[in-house]
Length: 80
Image 1 (cartoon, rainbow, N blue to C red):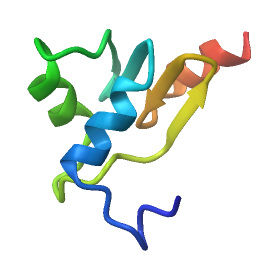
Image 2 (cartoon, rainbow, N blue to C red; image 1 turned 30 degrees about the vertical axis):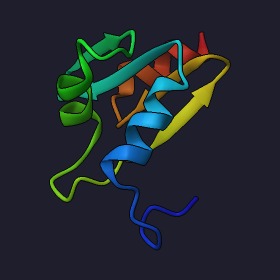
Image 3 (tube, helix red, strand yellow; image 1 turned 180 degrees about the vertical axis):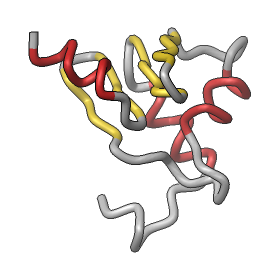
Image 4 (cartoon, rainbow, N blue to C red; image 1 turned 90 degrees about the vertical axis):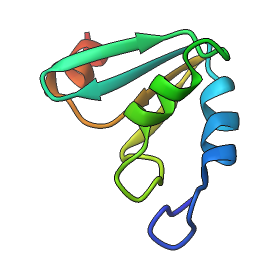
């Protein structure tokens, strides 16, 4: 899916985020981890979407985990 060509609204973003067991979101130098449920829906959507409300890039699924946004340390940890 190319987010530049197709707008991914909040309902689709939330459905995507709920499909992961754990969602890791890069937020500046921090890495925030969430277990997506209705108690953290607003916070998770705010962190995982940009100013336009579209899903932030890059967005990766590795197994049951989702990785949203870019943080060198987060992707460095994936390499081992």
